[in-house]
Length: 179
Image 1 (cartoon, rainbow, N blue to C red):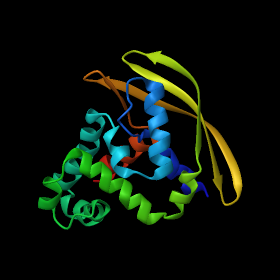
Image 2: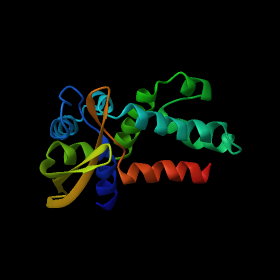
Image 3: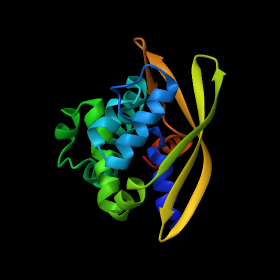
């Protein structure tokens, strides 16, 4: 159950970008995308700078001193057979494949997320970002679990996009530290 909650937190940075005129719209779009497990929509709403940072973490690992072990460990996460194949992926596709890998690891996640409810409880301005506060409620193994959560959003070319949550930041830091 704990692994499902951690994986769910990772997805607090995913959303659908069609209605991203405001931070609230981004969160509503996110809820719909996650409920439907629409990976394309999830990746569309990620801030382009965040997609680039995620890809750079992998690229740094693949080209660093421990490149051989990084490639052996991380290329399968991205369904890439070679470093060359990885290089041909867009930032968005790297993110998309990582989400799909998590789905393969935990197929029950789709059931949990299909019934997840998101209730926006507030917003706070923080420099050039808005922090959306919300309550996430989900059913895990027959038990209703609620937690208060935050999601940072930031504008890019006039639209709001989601920033990586702390759990995703930890993933990047882990890749950097290991490789």
